[in-house]
Structures are given as structure tokens and as C-alpha cells.
Amino acid sequence: MNIATQDRSFRVTHRLVLSIAVPMTLGFVSTPLLGLTDTAVVGQTGVAADLAGIGIAAVLFDFLFSFTGFFRTSTTALTAQAYGRMDEAEERAVFFRAAGTSLVAGFLLLALASPILAAGLAILSPEPAAATVAATYFAIRILSAPARLINDCLLGFVLGRGRAGVGLFLQTLLNGINIALSITLGLWFGYGVSGVAWATFTAEVVTALAGLAFAFSGFRKVSTGTDWRAVFALDKLKSLFAVNRDIMIRTLLLTGSFLIMARIGAELGTVTLAANGILMNFFMVTAFFLDGMAAAAEQICGRSLGAGDRQAFRDAVRLTLVWSLGLSALLAVATMLVGNQVVAFLTSAADVRAEAGLYLVWMALTALTGALAFQMDGVFMGTAWTAEMRNMMILSFIAYLAAVFTLPQWFGNHGLWAALNLFLLMRGLTLAAILPGKMRKMFG
Image 1 (cartoon, rainbow, N blue to C red):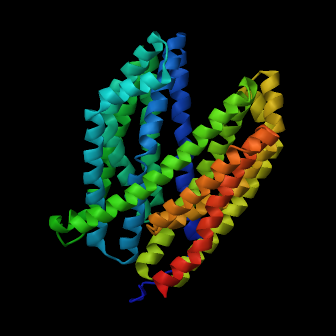
Image 2 (cartoon, helix red, strand yellow):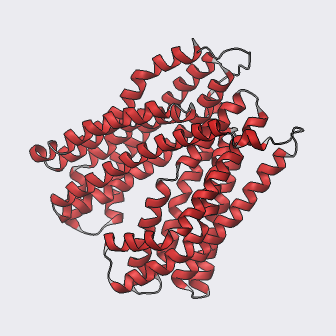
Image 3 (cartoon, rainbow, N blue to C red):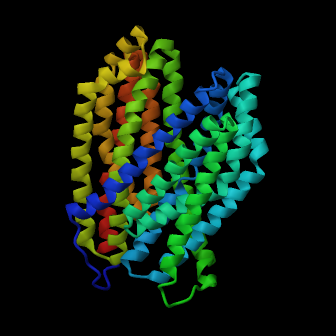
């Protein structure tokens, strides 16, 4: 199918890439500060059960919201394509469609809150005191689920329109309110865990209202009204659900790969498990930076596809790859230069420090092997070629399983880290291999 029917071309420059990547990176990097603040506030109570309980609840929410991340990515893709076609009515329809389905999902989470909590506590098996704290935090924070999912849609919408600065503002507002209220309610007013939970609820709701105000102010500038039958047309909803389904499967396999790594690491001993846990913090930081570049690939590739601009698409792929590889190289070098000092800061256990030092080079290598994977994910999410992304993830996951259940038997923890690097490399290479064919099909 040749989609290049009209001239809506635009230039893809380094400045354009960075104008999206830098604000989104700053927004992503600010998120861990929230977790650190919550832990510090709750830690002031001096009660171990409080820290354990909020840790248990955080795991549950991380699990829940990792599988609803498709609201952000699918909204980005479909908005960017409509933006590239200069189809303002469809941009608006994409937002309302995503917001409507996210609200349904949010209220469904509310309805299922009790069984979700019960299942989580049964699986994680915390001590009774910690379970009570976790239940208190969960019962309050789950109230923000509809607002949280609306915020995902809002972030996807502004990113899809190339308004990364607005995305950064919303992320900063969310985290800023959360941190300020966590300290105020949890520490100064002495509400502890419940104060921290209400801080999160308030931050999500206020940010959702601010984001909706921004979105609707833009809608009022468009003279045409909203065709609600088109917004909730069955074929459009089916397409949205298909994209979301594929992204969710991809996320499930990605999450599963890290769980398997942790499980096998545990079999290698407590010291090795602790060392791997510390090193994975480096990976999370790397992911925040590469996610920013992936966000740029999402928006510009989606916009190029919508505009039918083959050259812009090629430039978007090339420039985001160049920046991803350059950034990953810097991250790898930084890991090797200061990695041991960071490990020493994170733990005072000499045996864990020594163990982490043995595998630091593998951790540095993940920045390089993961660069193409993150960038290609951005390309395929922005174009909504999610079925292909899902299939390549399945193929890569199969290769990972073969490696992760054999290499550690021969090489111990070195084999485990080698399997992770193979998984990252496979994800990027398989998507890159099928990209030319997709481009020929779409652009002719």
C-alpha cells in the first residue's frame, strides 16, 4: 500500500529529535525520585513493617501499571499518525477513544481491587504487620487508578503531537506534587503510609485535571465538532484493542524475562542475587535515557508515516539510531568509570561489592546491546506495527529462554548476564531485519 498521496513532508533534524528526547528523558528520570522520597518519608517512622509494607504495595502497583502502559504508547502512535496527516478531527477522536477505554479500565481496577490485593499478598506472603500496611496504602492509592490511566493517555497525546515540553511539565507537576505532599502529609503531619498514599492520589488527580484542561483548550480552537459515532466506531475500537493487546503481550514477555533472571540469580546464591539486584539499578537508569530517544522515534516515525513521507521516515530512523548508539556508548563508558563507586555507595557489604564488580562489564554492555532494541521499539510503536513487534519479541524470548536455561549451567552468573545481553540484541536485530520490508510495503 503506497500511502504517499499528498505532500506533507517535513525535515527531520537533530534539533527535532532532541526537542522530544531531552524533555522526555528528564521526565522519565524524575520518576525514581518519587520512590526514593516515599521510602525516606516512611523510613522516618522507624518501623520496619512500614517500609516492608509500602515496598510490597509498590511491587503490586508496578506490576499493574506496567501492563497498562499501552495506553500511553498506542495513543502516541495513533495521534502522531493523525498529526502527520494533518487530521485534527482524528487526533481528537484518538484522544477521546483512548481516554474512554482507559476510564473503563481504571474503574475495572477499582472494582477488582480487593481480589487483586488478596492475590498479591498471597503470592508475596509478607508478615502480618507488613501486610496490614500494604493493604492500607493499596486501598488509598488504587482510588487514583482512573486518573493514572488518563494521565498515560494525556502523555501519549501530547507526545504524539510533538509537545514533549508539555509532557515534561505534566511529569514534573505529577512528581513535584507527589513529593511535596508525601513530605507534608507523611512526615510533617505524621500520617505516615496513609499520607504518602493520599499524596499519590492527589498528584494523579491534579495532573489529570491540568492535562485535560490543556487538551480541551486545544480542541476549542478547532472549528469542527466531535463526531462521537466516529470516535467509538467499532472498527476503530478493534484496531485500538489490537494494538493494546500486542503491546501488552510484549510487556508481559519483557517483564517475564526479568523475573526469570531474578529467579535463576537466586539459585546462584544470596550474594549473587544481591549483586545482580544492585546492577539492575544501572540498567533501569540506562533504560530511562534510551526511553527518551525511543519516545522521539515514536513521535517522528508515526508522524512521517501519517504524512506518507518516506524520506522523513528514513531520516527519523537514522538520526534516532545515531543518537541512541552514541548515548549508549557514553552510558557504557560511565558505568565502567564510576560503576564500582556507585556500587560502594549502594551497599557496604564487601562480598556484594566484590561480586558486583565481577559482572560490571556485562552491565555496561547492556547499554550497547539494548540501544537498537529501545530505538526499534520506538519505531514500531510509533507506526503501530505492533503485531510485528510482538512476533519478534516472542522469537527473541524463545532465544532468551534457550540461553538463560543453559549458559548459567556452564558459566554461572556470567552466563546469566550473557543471556540478558543476547535477549536485548535479538530484540533489536530482529526488528531491524524486517523494517526494510515494512517500509517498502507502506511507502512503495
